[in-house]
Amino acid sequence: AAAVRGRAEWVRGVTELRDGPVGDAHQSLLLAASLLAADAPADAAAAALAAADAAWAAGDLSACLATLAPGPPHRTENPAPGSDGPADARSAAAHSAAVVHDHRVGMRALLEGRLDRAGAPLGQVVERGRTEGRPETLLRSAAAALLLGDVDAARRGGARALAAARQLGSDTLVPQALEYLAYAELRAGRHPQARTHAEEGLRTALRTGQRNTAAHHRAVLALAASIEEEPDVVARHVTAALDTARRHGLAQAATLAQWAAARADLGRGRPFDAADRLGLLVLPGPGRGHFAVWRLAVPCFVEAAVLAERHEDAREVLTDFADWAAFGADPQAAAQLARCHALLAPAEHADALYRRALDRHDEAGGDFERARTALLYGKWLRRRRRPREARGRLGTALAGFERCGAGVWAAQARGELRALGAAPQGTGTGAPARLGLLTPQQLRIARHVAEGATNREVALALGVSTRTVDYHLRKVFAALGVRSRLELARTVGEAEQAREVRGAGEARRAGSYEKTGAQH
Image 1 (cartoon, rainbow, N blue to C red):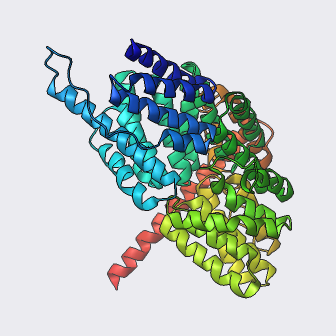
Image 2: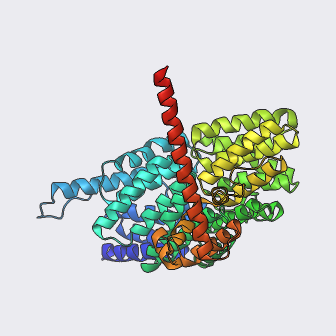
């Protein structure tokens, strides 16, 4: 009877974790673990780990650590008397129990700051994701990889979990797999890919009644949109994410959404607003953001605080952030730390710190963060009256922002280049140059519309909402100076024709050079 009640509480807790107050989910799952402990210890361990997931979502560090406290060694239940338990079933159960045990041990060590003890068990969970085919195990593998900062392994685990969930027809697990994929892409600085996964994840989460999962996807969408020229999209996703987060106690989703709103402020030249928002998240105090997320927002806060003349506040959070960078769980943190120190350093030290940050970015990868450092370095060089060096750094920043679709930050780089008297690429008056003013997403929409597609058809083709297409199309019209779809089609056509002519000319020149070389 206890086991039956335990499994009922387990189902209730998992359901609440996806679509209800996560504090209630935590209690239901703890009760399930206690009821299952005698007859089904492996299931009890799995329920306890799910309870830790609920405490994590709530941002309750003490409850998370208590739930992850060491328990008895994991074991697999023996088959019922008189039954011949299949070998593959026993093997699968043993694998599941080992994954749960290793994840629990590694997660607790990580939260205690013991990376030396966390790496091995979490690494085992990641490794099992290379051979396992069940979506639950693959989701644990992706989650463990994110904890370790191995974004490539997280992407692989998330992609395999998504494929497995789809193959099994498990609609409830698809949004979660997409959530891990979206987070991994964000951590890697690949915002367009994160947005694609989160858009699909949001649709499937809402369709399957998982409002908490939907809130996480909205937070990712807000972060992705915060680097683009879409303030209304950021605001819409932030508002929706916070609405669910506040009612259901989702501290993690709330912190991500608030960070997105602040980053949008910073990108649009509102550092005082950004510093006010981010200060609540990252400065010590009862209102500090989620224990596993707030450090990710520190580089944004330092930049905003320096611009807002809040240097002491910026310095206050850097000690914690230095520990986080040394921890090694965030591939971007070392470069971001050097950038933060450069922002606060006297002139004689800042140059070397910016260069060190760029070197670290080269090791970590990620176009967006490297471009942000190059932009700040270029601004610093311009203020120091070193225009030639500034032009190089700002040009690199502009190219990086354009490559990852960071339209609002690209506009900053263009403004700095114009202040230097250097015309950014694509600011000429011809059609090809004018198309160079568009972000990658805007250019895709412009080409679809030029081919005669309606806004709804464009939205379906690109997997976005018609509202997003409407917003981008208004930006396209303004940037190109056109007032109708017909003018837009003509402008795009002229640009494509000019590109073909230029390509043919380059091919002829290349052929001429080859012929000349052969003659010599």
